[in-house]
Length: 375
Ligand SMILES: Cc1ncc(C[n+]2csc(CCOP(=O)(O)OP(=O)(O)O)c2C)c(N)n1
Image (cartoon, rainbow, N blue to C red; front, side, top):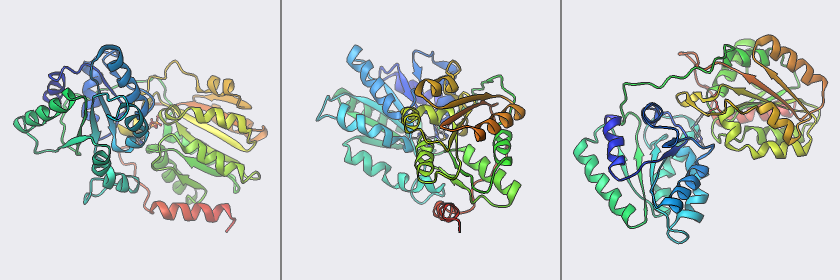
């Protein structure tokens, strides 16, 4: 379905605000909203739970119903305010959801999406949220009748969800942003891994950062056994790294994070700072975008992760925007006690032929744990 028609249908429900976290299945929607809606009508909060809460605020303040979009991975973040804020048994607040369907049963997808895909529709049923699937075959007439169902639910103060399959939405116009930085993210990862010592451990964040780290480690060393790839669970790599570092004081643990992921659960930085784990180095590759799912802005161009880390209480913070600066920062980090933050400003984009890990998630876990044990 052409995205313009899809959005027009939602506007016809008298919905003005689109609030969400980007997703690759919803890229045509994200592109369209970035190109056609103002930043007061289309907003990207740090996580899906925050999106639900913001939409609830719009309703409380104006009776206007909002549209909240997310990848199905984000349902976990949204679950708490859905169940304990907007549900009919609590404040009874209507909302329209658009959910990108990764891991659709019987379709090939990445390991982190399989189980979430299996539970997406049952979860909506459990929450009492009526839903409809949108796929490539959904035409205007079918969409209109689904919109009528949505309208009935919203009028009865209920929520309604469109679960959107891969390829269902079409948009010729692509949203393009340039963040002004030139250091490629993959080159930054190569620079980090080029300084690897045999006792180091690396926890990499969700999306292309893990894929690039996997490929760069294999290219440099022919293996990746010092890497734990956080393929799902966006925003939690730093706490995984904190846990690993706390129980391995003689190893240096590096978290390679993204700006979108760091923002998603930024409170973890406060916890990490307070734990004062000497051997932890938290690196944020900041491209001001959710690049892995289509390059939508994270809108953190005015946020300094280095300054923020300092305020939280990280022991040392560094900034870099080139291989030389990053190499120098990494050297200093090794000579100092953590927790350390290195913010690296990186360019947008990735290699067209970037691959995906060939081993299963469990195999990655096993080889990482064997490395930790010194096997
Ligand atoms: C909870 C959750 N919401 C959304 C997604 C979809 N998703 C995967 S990677 C990604 C973007 C990550 O952005 P960032 O951390 O800045 O790294 P970048 O891709 O820009 O390198 C998103 C939104 C997800 N996996 N999990």
